[in-house]
Image (cartoon, rainbow, N blue to C red; front, side, top):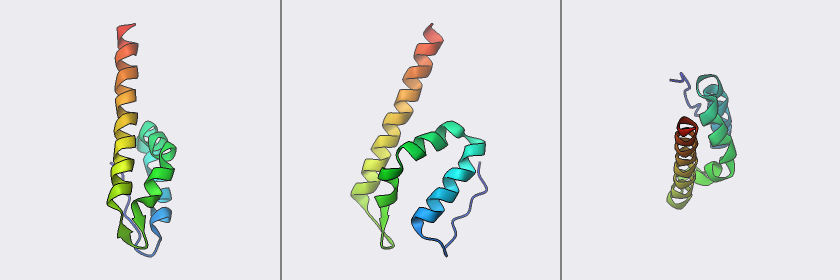
Length: 79
């Protein structure tokens, strides 16, 4: 688990960047998923407010990416 702590003095996007960097050492695959879905992550918070629709879109994209990993791993095990 990362020891990352959000910095209230930074904007959301700055904290996201720092978080992804901290995850790279722990779980490079997850960091890759987050980076691939960066455009969906940043709209989750706008002007200090959470945007529910953007969060749902981001969560759905992450779920698809994780399902793809499970499918790939299952196919690899079946070979």
